[in-house]
Image 1 (cartoon, one colour):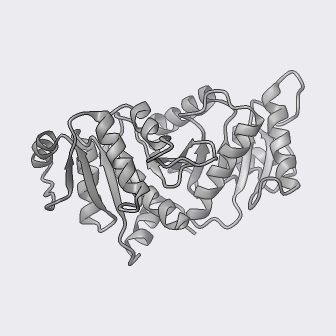
Image 2 (cartoon, one colour; image 1 turned 180 degrees about the horizontal axis):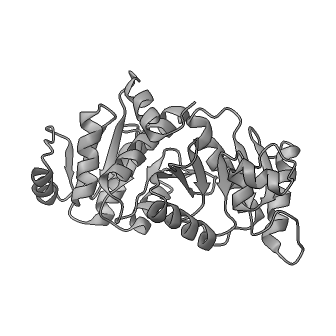
Amino acid sequence: MITDFKKLISLVKESDKVSKMTVAAPYDKETLKAIKLAKEENITESILVGEKKRILSTAREVGLEIDKGKIINCQDNNSAAQEAVKLVSEGEADFVMKGLLSTSALLKAVLNKRAGLRTNQLLSYVAVLDIPSLDRLLVMTDPAMNIKPDLSEKVQITENAILVAKALGIIKPKVAAVAAVEKVNPKMPVTLDAALLAKMGDRGQIKDALIDGPLAFDNAISMEAKDVKGIESEVAGQADIIVVPNIEVGNVLYKSLTHLAETTIAGTVIGATAPVVLSSRADNYRNKFNSIVLGKVVAQHHS
């Protein structure tokens, strides 16, 4: 079982399959340091798309040697996003990574009907957290993209997270739809959605997972909290996936864990034909590197 990023990285390094990613507008040092580490660890090869002089200038600063033909010159971010995505859609690379450009510019290229990576599935952000006090990796969704998802959107968000968990080797992930309380309360609509997700899991409408909800966050991840409250559940206390009710809850929880609990992170957008590695401009190179590793794992699971 993969319990932390160290084990995940070791497993990926053992793979004989060579992966390739494109990176749109890789101008910042942290992104290029992550690309350098991915190259040194034989995780993935990279095609860098953007202003050639700008890429080379920053690459020299971080000591990244770029092989001949591995830079595609584009003069603006929109063109860089389109070209990076196009290469993936044409099978020249396995996934795409965001550099120093807006998320909207990259996702616009991803959703392009002609040369993008569009599917009928909702795009959602799936984060993977390595929390020192937890004995397993925790998948969380969606702390970054979908603002106030309705039930049908939550179904797709959950399905996307299940795909990531399975790529991490969790055969039948345990999914907790979290709320402020663990009882259904008609005055709290998110508890109704959580209960419906759980029932849809029971009925096989959401496949390949055990789903329960509503569960409060503490009794979703802590056996002690679950036992104190006397909750009977196959998911409570041992959730692999946390489905948050909206972006406010997800974003605050995600940033609280990363800034206060020494949590290391990875994240990718799921729902396209290939992973879209998105990381915050504030992320350090290790977290960006973790996201590259996750992108490779999910891309291989897709293929």
